[in-house]
Length: 72
Picture (cartoon, rainbow, N blue to C red):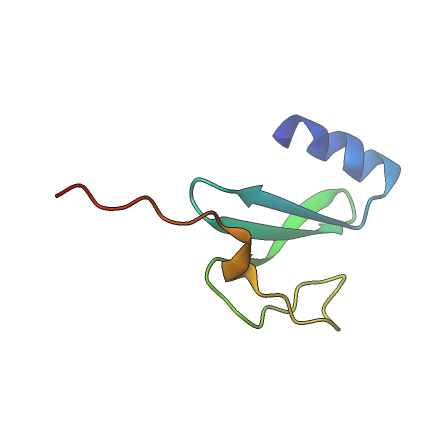
């Protein structure tokens, strides 16, 4: 995905979300001129409001697969 960032900036995509399922983290970026700026990092939030959909609360916690059981 990081290889696509320059292309998305060049064509004017205003927002980009990078989702790391293993780390259980969503990082939101906004295009500022030709540079991507991080506008938020989310993990277990249940009421995340993330641009450009910030009018709608998102339950990010529900996006992640169940945690693996701990080894005894």
